[in-house]
Amino acid sequence: MKKRSSLKIMLDLMILAKVHTRDLVTATLAGVISFFSSTGIAVLAALLIVSVGGFIDVPFSKIIMWMAVLAFIRGITRYLEQYMNHLVAFRVLSTLRDKVFSAVRKLAPAKIEGSNKGSLISMITSDIELIEVFYAHTISPISIAIICGITYIVLIALYSPAIALVTLISYLIMGVGLPILFSKWSKNIGRILRRKIGGLNNIFLDLLRGITEIMQFAYRKRAIRVIEKTNKSLVEHQAVLIEQLALLLALEDVIVVLTICAVILIGIWTGLAPAILLPLTFGIFFSFPAIANVASLGNGLSQSLSCGERVLNLLEEKPVADEVTNGIELNLELATDPLIVVNDLSFSYGDRLVLENFNLKVAQGEFLGIRGESGCGKSTLLKLMMYFWPLETGEILISGHSVQKINTQSLWHNISYMTQHTEFFEGTIRDNLLIAKQNSTEAEMRDALDKAAILDFVDNLEHGLDTTLAELGDNFSAGERQRFGLARCFLKDTKILLLDEPTSNLDTLNENIILDALKCNSDGKTVILVSHRESCFKTCDRVIDM
Ligand SMILES: Nc1ncnc2c1ncn2[C@@H]1O[C@H](COP(=O)(O)OP(=O)(O)OP(=O)(O)O)[C@@H](O)[C@H]1O
Ligand SMILES: [Mg+2]
Image 1 (cartoon, rainbow, N blue to C red):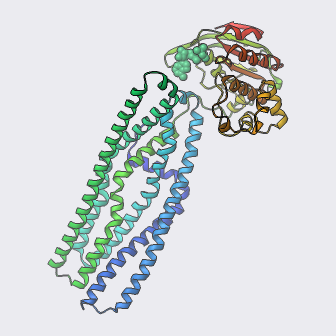
Image 2: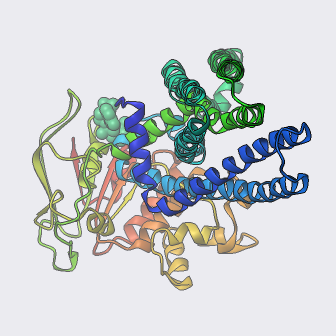
Image 3: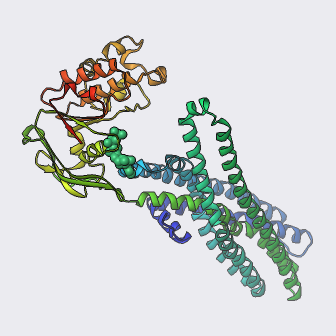
């Protein structure tokens, strides 16, 4: 994983929020006015005391009136600051979620195949949520602290340069020293914590997927132990972070108390009038919250920044095969024969050679079977035809054009690719068919279902095409799933069909249904059917061994 400094992460995250600069400035201004008001109220309260004591001659009612005005301003601006900050934060987060998803889409399938889905899930959910801390509680607090701090120091210096100097030192320790110290200290913990939470998600996903195995094998106790162990180490790290936070808060209080003591001593020592010293002391005491906000960042920010780092890294990750966008558009109406040509193709995953000098020609309209032992590279060949992975040596031509020169979207638009497992998304059966062809009519959908021999099944459902998957639950049998997958292919109606063991999970009856459906409806289509099962190939025009 690429590591960046905290400053670099903050800069990169700020760039993402550039379009919201106006709102952030509004939030900061509101925050500054709000802190000025609260400090102002404290100073007025001190003036009230000195006026009661007879040290100054300001009407009681006037001070009370100004306090009320400031309280009103404080309320409004505080509200505005919080509202604007969070609005910006949540807007940026929603943009980030979109960006993360498109990054994942770009990386898929090559980089996603081998990655931890749990980490991805925690990135899309909790990591992005935690970045909120950065946008809502970092950018404007820092700006507010700088503006307020400088103003306070200048104002104090007008009455006592010595007190101004002491206050400045306290501000610097609290607003610069503490956050740097604590963010360095908690940065690694923050990283480890985010990784551990991702890991926990992974374990849960894994266990949920394998719940039947857990039930039937003696894995139950071990599964519980695995979760307990991960949980325990998560809590241990969280405890360290909380200890640091407690220490930080205690240190903040110590700094405030020591500063106030120093201010009073210097004031008395330099002979400052009580009518000035008391309001000054009150003002300084109440000026610290603006600075303390920055000090507290060191702790919470570490997690926010490590989340930011993970998300930024994902956004910048390069896909294995870059989507071709400035290539040619495939038009298979004018296709050449042979339609698919593979020349001297060699391919390896890392240093594991899977294909070596492989050659193949598939004629237009041919129904080709590819037979081969498990692991010999059949699926890989189809994935290369889909340009899921970039080619190393050799070439794959579709209608005379290399797949690396065809616009990837156009390539996918012209090929139907079906594997042994058909995925469904939330929604109705209709929604799940429309994935294949957005604007298909009811008649087209029914026709596709009919060709895939699943129309009767749908018609027998109470809500037909509008049955939701939730209603069906997991009640699709493997055979029905694959027939839906096939219906999607028929609906998409492309000239090329790549089928990767579409019947390997099925019994002979279902296998025959699928194969017959394919045979009857593949006129004019070029089909490559990959399998290691002999029974699959009876419908093929030609079968090759790999
Ligand atoms: N993403 C990957 N990363 C690394 N190795 C992989 C990857 N995908 C497949 N392999 C390896 O490459 C080899 C060929 O895999 P492939 O899936 O193409 O085989 P196959 O012929 O389709 O096998 P089967 O009949 O079992 O489906 C296998 O040994 C497999 O372990
Ligand atoms: Mg395979």
